[in-house]
Length: 220
Image 1 (cartoon, rainbow, N blue to C red):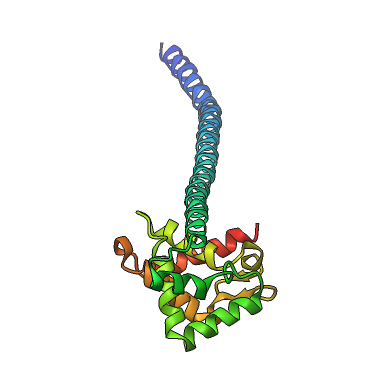
Image 2: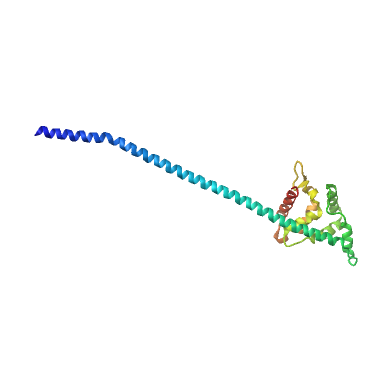
């Protein structure tokens, strides 16, 4: 009786030990599968995040391109308006009015000078603006006729009237290795600012920005 009990206990102990020895292996396999599953899930999430980031980067790039296109289109509109303004004014200048002696005198003073087609002519105009108050007043009066509802159009029209596009293409606002500086013509800058600053709350920085862009686009 006692022997049988002891045998049963032995069997029970052996069985328990057997189960105990197999448990770590089972647990190890489970942990391995769990780890593998977690890694796959993490990789999937990372790939999804990367895809979203790539999509976002593409959308931002497309938006920047669109903004650039809109900006260039707006500038082209200003440019076209300015061209029409210049053409109209130049036609008016050729129609002298005998009854208006002052206007006739101003037109004669400016006749044939614009647009300047060389840098030398541009320099002559700048010097004359400095030394001849009558010439300065005549040109200022003429340029004020370019005033429109938009400062950009007004400024570009004045620039186109004063400077031929072939000359403008050789220049930039501050100059560079292969570009002449427009800042070397301070009296021309001053007279253009005179009709643009304060125009619809525009300041000197706004006017300079328009001038800078005009020279940049003239080089195309």
